[in-house]
Image 1 (cartoon, rainbow, N blue to C red):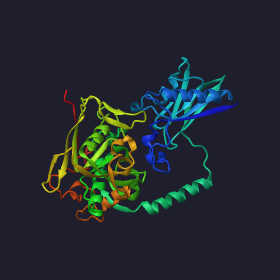
Image 2: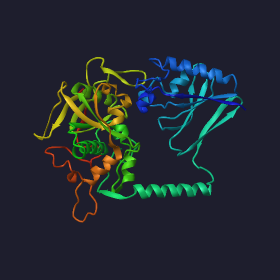
Image 3: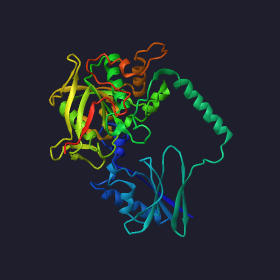
Image 4: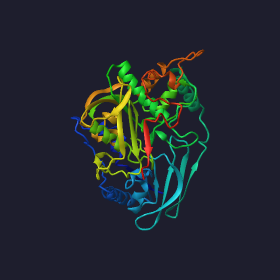
Length: 424
């Protein structure tokens, strides 16, 4: 039988991938674009056209997508595409790292279409069964089958090489430093303050000031770049590379208080309700989120920031900047210019949709690789009696000397730098 595949990817790729990918040689922003439309209409029409062309030459047509089912992508999810199109029998999905098999979604003609997604990182393999012109079943195979001896040896050799380079113990953690709610798959780093988020933001802030002498006022680190806990026990470069696995650059920009407020508000748009990779973990900064206020931040079809709340009511309140000389947090001045350090993907590139920083002055676009900043920060911790390597305890942090500066890495929900409140 002849099978046609039609590839579809989410328009939010423009903000979730490295934005500079979409610049032309002269640096023009968005030289390339995705067909979307304000509510997905153009996307559905483009998919339908491609599907019809493919189906004319095939017995079965399958959409192979990188769309996902995350609520914040409503209008541009796999289920939305299926509901607004016809003429294909199955949708093999990705992007949200979900695992579901055999889900049936009604298409625009009221017919069932199989929707399936097989997790991530080749953890499982998926299969589809076709019969009588229809896709009749979907499932997963957890066994990878027989192993080839040459491949096994190659895998072991590569793993050993990684371990030699990244497996050296540089510190110890007396307790886990969490980015997840312990024992769950709930990612704190994408919705509220957390120990690993504080650690990552502190590391960038400390590195920029103590190692590079850049006098940054505070740090903002997108929660999507804090991907794992630091487990209790031995801490290696490999551990920290797992926390920040993309090996992205740390960048520094100068932005005014209004831009910072817009960034915090944009990052907090689903806090208390869901997760967003652009949620900002902070160092040298405090803020609160009133979850009783429904976000009305305006974004474009790709999810990029366009402007602040349409009703003028902000969820983010009481933004305060740490004053090192006085040892207190003071209200942020919307007109003042601040020097901010964080993931260059967010601050310099405008990734995750942080378009408010496009007019910010770039001080450094590649100060240091993120997990190496984590490593240098870890090495700067003090040692307790009998320790051979630094101990990642809050009281031994090189930032612990700052008066009234909150550090509680051992607490899963962080140091209280970000508070969520419901004022109803």
